[in-house]
Length: 105
Image (cartoon, rainbow, N blue to C red):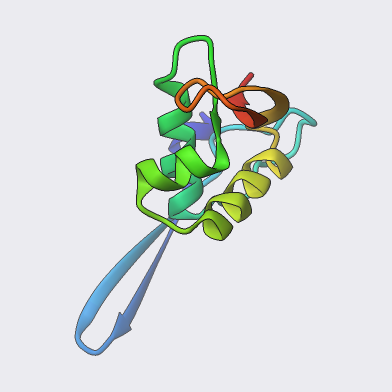
């Protein structure tokens, strides 16, 4: 099964052993392996999945995660490129302002 396939790379740096997992157990919408996501992008995706039927603008995402707006925008763009979320111009689920809102599809 594909979920059993994981490449594990161990690196030694300064006496610490770091384990990096490369998940290849799911495919993107186009049928190719999905790219690796940054920690901020994974946190944004988890946050957006908790919002029932709505989405959040970049400013609300940044405030919730405690990151700058620029970093939130870069991670949202990363998720759009990975076909995990989409953005629409509508009212934000938190601040209720009409803005570009990220949502899971």
